[in-house]
Image (cartoon, rainbow, N blue to C red):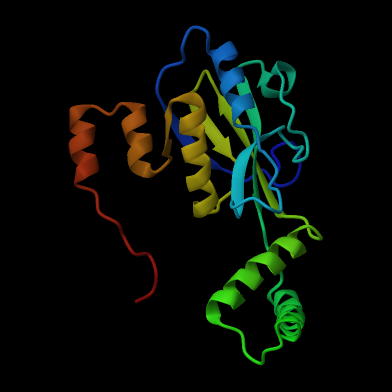
Length: 205
């Protein structure tokens, strides 16, 4: 989901850590190292995530102007995954097994041979297909220490948080009533009252 257009719905995260003095140069080097590297058909990886330009999934060359905007760091988080349609794989496997048995002059194929043949067929199909792509935008307010991530998928958020930590050396804490209260800096009396709160079910029993 894009940050620059469309519905502005996002998840918020608090950044746990301090900015280094040379953060712009350091961050830029680390971001470029972790820009999305497109999947190749013959690789072992079935899925890969990395950074791209905010709002531009195919722009993988990142520079200061595209990443830094005033006090914000803006990035796209892109994930590529190989998805071969099962029906297509089954059809190509039937063809490949028939050709293999005819070549070997046999009527049956072993499990090991079938698995090896499936790997060959899958890689061949990948060369004819493109990986499935998913992209979500991220905007980090450096002054506030708040990251807005334009996706509500828990799985996507989890992978993004790991990449954020490896890129910037800081952890992200998902916003919740408890983390927000801690961030606001409650007094001891308020903390005690907060701990005594319990959830209320407003639905009809």
